[in-house]
Structure formats: structure tokens, C-alpha cells
Length: 369
Image (cartoon, one colour):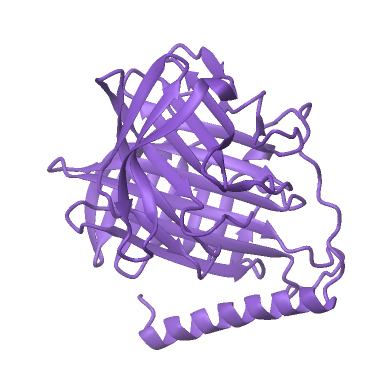
């Protein structure tokens, strides 16, 4: 049952007041000093299923799913699901269920060319009372009636109903996971400590339904899952990043990102290409280059995004073209960020190569992370 507008307004008010109260307590010292968060170190060996789950000791963590869907009449859609877990630094010894030790934030978005712009919704709440959580030991994240869970057989289930649209999807792995960077140790800057633990599951087979105004539409497609956790912050020179994850038609998978300085130049870059046989090629930062091809000015924020992008990985050139231009996601009521998050097609050296998602952050304001 959909909440009434009054209930939704009250819920937003409560969440906002809770966040304001937490920040006020932290500012006045009423919240205990933040404990030292664990470091991300290069010799850590990721183990599963444990590392599918939450790592509450680390400062920040996210599970991030993007993909392309197709309806029975071949209509293309893009979707994005993200669950964030953030440790607040509140005294971990406080056993009260009301203690705001962990915040859970969730975003869901649908890109539909027939609508002409991104449909999106966001939620924020503190973890507690088995209503909001990110569980350890396996992927199981919940925020009220929104849930992302990994089942015993390894497939994932997404169930998220927003006001005007919804997703009920099953995601089934078809390939082994991809440990990013050095066996899951992923550098995010020139300093070794600027890093995260990071793995991906490309080429997830997707089936299920997309809901428009409560009516289900059967879909299938493929998706990409990222799971990252860290205690580090971006380099002081960094303003944001450009990132792409793509499941390619030949069975290979491409990951590429750059961390940008405030003047727009590259601070750090990374790319990995795994072919269908499982062989991974890692590219050095100087071998990765992002070049805008076409920009789009948002009518919502006036930000200018390079929505069509050319990416070079060594001698290979990739051209990214958006499914539609207006795929800007405004999450100022949750994470505080506005970013472009869009379904894109890829060509490789002029030939059709596959589909993926492009993320562009720091174009409205420097990313605070």
C-alpha cells in the first residue's frame, strides 16, 4: 500500500530532524569521539561469503547495481540501485537501538526514453530494530520496504517500490567475480592509503518486472554489481570522478575511472579489461584517458556534464553514448550529492561493443567523501 502524501511528508521530516540532531551532537561533542576506522591495506585477502556482507567498522560502504533491461516489445530501459552504509562515529559501546551508529541510504532510478528524464527516489534512515540494516556475512541490506539480498544459491534479489515506479528483479551471476585493482585493493589516488576494497560482478543475468504506476512490465537484461568499502577520503585536490562499468557483447568486462582535480585534470586513473576467457589486463594511470565528446546542460541544476565520452585504454578507443541525456540524479536529501548516472552504449574502435553505465560526479559541487 502506498503511503499518503502526509505520511511521506512526516517521514521526510523525521529523517531530516534525525540527521540535523546527529550533526549537532557531533559538532558539540555530545557524541563520543570517532574511533579509529580500519585501514585499507594491500595484503588483505577478500574471503567469501563473508565479504559479500557489510563491514560496519569501516567508515563508508556501498552496493551498487546498474543495468540495461528490455521489455517484451524490445523497449530499452536503464536502472540503478545503490545502498550506502555510513558509520557515524557514535560510541560503538552504546548498546541502545536508538544510538545512530550506522546510517543507511538508498537510491533507486529508472531511465526510460519514453519518459524523457530519469525517474528517481531516495531514502535515509539510521540502522536499527530490524527495519533498517546492512548485515554482515552475506549481502542483505534493507531500508524499510526496500531490500537488496543475496540468496543461498548466489543470485540477488532487488525489491524496491518508489512512488511512481518500482523494481522486482532477480540477478543471476553468469561469470566469476572480478577483483578490482590488486586482488581487490583498489587505488583511488596517488597515495597508497587512498584506496578501497572493491570487487565487481559483471554480466549478471536479469529477469523480473518494472512497475509503472503500480502496473508490472516483464523485463530481462543484464547488470553490473559493484561492492566497495573504505575508511579513506578523497585526495584534497580531488573534485569528483568519472566511472564506467560495461558488460560487453563478446563476454568481456570493462571498468574504467578517473579522479579529477578541481581544474579538471586527471589526478588518478584506472582501467581493467577482462576477456571472456577470464584474462585480466590492468592499465597504468597514464594509459587511461577520458575525453568529453558532447556535453549536456542540466535544466534542473545548470550543471554541464560530458554525457558522451571517449575513453582510451592504451591503444583502444571506446565511445560512450547515452540512452538519453537527462539522467541526472539529485540526492541532496540523502548523500548531499548531485551526479549524472546514465545508461550508455559502447563502441570499440568504431564497432558496436556493448552496454554499460557512466557515472559523473563533482560537476555541481566538489564531492564531499
